[in-house]
Image (cartoon, rainbow, N blue to C red; front, top):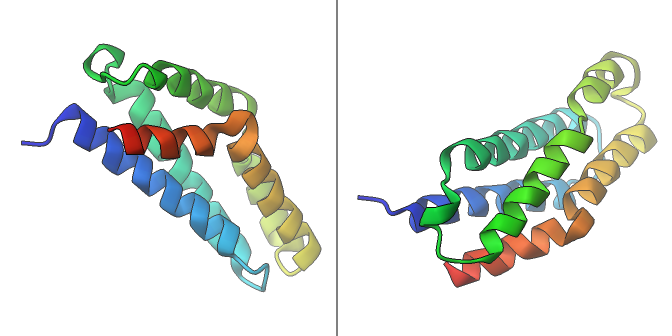
Length: 124
């Protein structure tokens, strides 16, 4: 049986994997699809954490802070519509694709969210 800590840790690792994929993307043709896929994966995993993980069952006190950062991220950053609008018009414009990727990374790394995820994984 998987514990809450193991379940949370596995989801956080998947978020870091998608973040890493976004960082390693080289801004070439077709990368907008990769950016869209990884962004949707990250958002989905964050939503799972917010809805399914109970604060009281995670012993690490940093989890509540991270959970509030996740909620802030979802409330303030919505790139899906921009990507959908951009895809038919600018999917071959590498500068626009790069800017979209960098904006998503900037939002994810804001408030040190990715660093907090790494720290929490180590504590779990």
